[in-house]
Length: 66
Image (tube, rainbow, N blue to C red):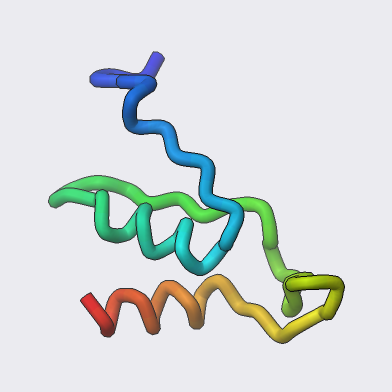
């Protein structure tokens, strides 16, 4: 069971970088932001091309911008 679950707060964002940014911006004090799905993969497919990607680096960059 998840306390305070509200379906109005469900977002579908296909751009992984934008989705990570949205999650970080929505997070409040004592929240946990869990980013799943890529694991140790070092690339992401965009427009049919494999591009370098590291969720950890993206999170660090987004946090610096906030």
